Amino acid sequence: KKISYFVLTPVDQPGARFYVPAENPVALAKLSPLLTEQALEELVASVDRTKSAWIEDENRRKLRYREIIGSGDRKAILDMVAALHIHRKELEQKGKKFHLCDENFLHDGEKLLCSEIAFVLDVSKQKAKKWLDDRGVAYQLRDIKLENPTREELTAWYEKSGLPLKKFFNTSGLLYKS
Image (cartoon, rainbow, N blue to C red; front, side, top):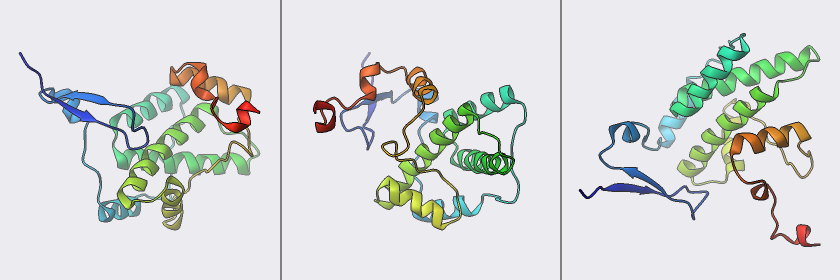
């Protein structure tokens, strides 16, 4: 039997290919059309910035946030990002640190949102972040050249990625070769 596939190429990874069986309802259910600019505006306007949907129990929070990231539900991702920003500000005011796992969920959520916004608006990810900022959605932009990741962050990112360690270093750049 011949199987038909949708061949998907990530915008930011032109060499990568994902093959999705055209007759697999589970796989197809995970695909969703891009939002329009108007739908993006409506989505951002729908976020309630006055309250946080924070989950106190760390284990429940990790499970729920994994589900949200995996679901691709943009509203849930945006609400999660907003809750994480609110919680981080609350911790900063108390002089406490933001947990690394929450930082990772925040990063993943922002990456998903900004990637789609950048594509829909045909702008860079930095401009997508500015677009969110202009609409009152907090985000964190971090230049790792200026603010180097800690050993713990690098270890967590490496373990979470499943990639070979070599992929974390630009070995073809002039700085590396010098």
